[in-house]
Image 1 (cartoon, rainbow over the protein chains, first blue to last red):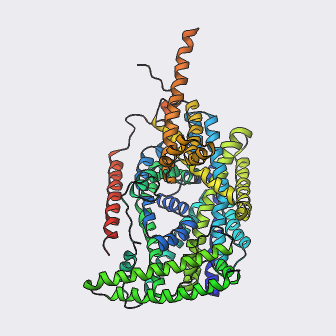
Image 2: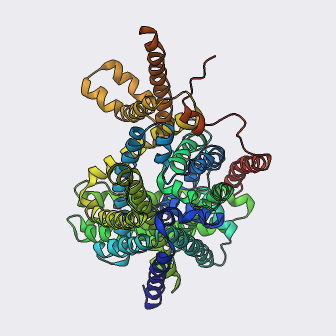
Length: 583
Length: 49
């Protein structure tokens, strides 16, 4: 990066912290700090909703995924607009009417304090640890790409966000989100322009898309029905629908966004805005990934994008073989480039034959690269290795014009910081409102709670930075945390379905229903392992039928909670009704 | 028939007649049709090149 890029990045970071701290004097009282006194316009809330959902990993990971595999990830979002409709009809008006700070506070009004505390505790547990991952994942990538120490990246990203969230509260989070979303959108537009303008003059935009289409990278809708395929039309529409319902309707980091809107209608408008814009924005992000692939058809790509692993393999025990494979890859690239050019120039009647030749050379280049990946793995004694997250940052730092590099790195920081800020704000709200004020100091002054809220935000910020620092060594624990999150989401939705959708469910039904839901999803996930451990032939024969993509867990968890909750509620009511008869 | 709902259930759960006004129903219909159009549009995009 050149000095201009560093200046752009530095200016972005300073401006964000300044915006947040400037708003600190305007967050009067706890309601101002957590809900902005319900005064924000719908468009700001809508942009904040989108910025919160778009983490750095969404920006960097999905472009990399589109580079390697194409655009089918977009199906993940098909259920989102439909989920927004359901939330506008149900959750949003109920939360407004109940006048709550947290989604879980509503559960006490509907059920009891036990259900509220349990759901809030699960939220703090899963989100508290995952906040560390949200900082750690991009910081690992950025530190390699920028050549920074990882701790420096964590501190720049984590502490800057903590400072403005701690002082400015939800107002600072929302208004910085608006600006961060602006940086992301400008960065994406600049990136799109830069890629297209750097394609060879003989290759038009349409030719570029034809090359991408030839490799199947433009396939966006897969209509096959398969439970274990992650991205299909049906997993997106059904599984994604339940995931989005749960994320936007029951996760405090999103609920808090629309609770800050001026009115019920403005809260709804913010979600409807998300329904209209989320898929097009995601489409552009994926298209950029696909165009980066086309770009690297005409510019020599590195065999391995992760520079650190590349260096390690080069100087490791298999260094000689690795360098040999690299030479082979350069030749394969040259052959593919020639075929891509011929395919782009071909007339309609030559398209089929040139396409075949291009695909043959593409497959050969892929096979050589795979040899390189295997050598990287061998260098690391067979450890798992994924290169896709490094594609986009490497492209940015190597091929974007001066100034644009700083802007795009700022956009990645913006994506990370907007998600972290919302998480910190939500964690602080749940800690103070659902636990401290509810169970420990119910009668303190507003000023006291405001101080406690700021301290809680600071605590979660430092906790997230420490968790991020150790994230690399926590390997399996992080996996457990992520899995727990996916077990928990659908079940949490189930509790809200019981609360809002039925008048029959009782507090005991909801409480035990939630625990049943989480256990059911965990059982489905580990069914194969349990069957192997028990050496049960019957269970082993059932196991393949229960293998499903994580998107379906939300449906399973939700259904399990609703069924178990209604059964338990029914038993409880039956007992209640029969008790007076015994007297 | 006995009403089994508790007072809190009556106050904080979905009651008949409390659905959204007609204006919002039009917005929801537009979102639904938009989703359909997006999926069909993406399918057409996949096969356009």
